[in-house]
Length: 287
Image (cartoon, rainbow, N blue to C red; front, side, top):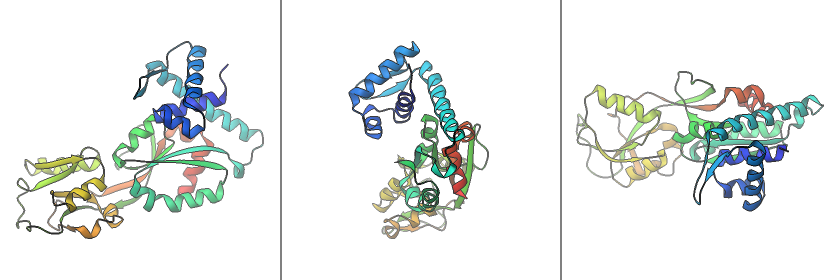
């Protein structure tokens, strides 16, 4: 028989793709978690996960079952509310993902409002690179803070809450850039992927610049670190620069490319927003 706790363990494992982190999150031993997943696979009659000593991935059947598990848990929560649990007493876990910068500058006000309204909902906050936010949403996070395109994303509900200019930053010391700047000779520290990288690539293409790339990294904080060390010139959102301890170690290059603004906001899967009272409650708290 499949119970709600086992489904919760499975959804958590799908989200973390790591037995150790899931064990810590749900306060069970790794061996107990492994046994629960084995019993679940026996009940379903299919292998749901591929696992070795270092990684976990979902089989095609595991992906299908994850959708079933998430939907079942959401419907179960709805039923509890329908049976008389008032909105003010919502209970459960809400999984959030955000970059360190977003956690410090964007989340506090929203979370303060949400916690005041729903003190019994447990928040699980994971931090990481902003560029990975949409991937974490696909992997099972309930709500993420992400850099969002202005165009809609299929199946995703998004709410842009702030827009910030993209700045060109250079080392505080060292030779000044030529005027005009020959961008083909300037060593560049670029984001490895994401909306900002797409915008930079488009500008380079339009101006027929063959870039001299010093490094490609994940995370705006890493870009600022390399620029502060004198490795090259980088591009970061103004919001990140203002909140960084390295702000006084770099200088803004006014002659930098006129890149599109960086839009930051919350997003969640539309299907989950429709089905989960916890996610709906959080969404209403965003304002």
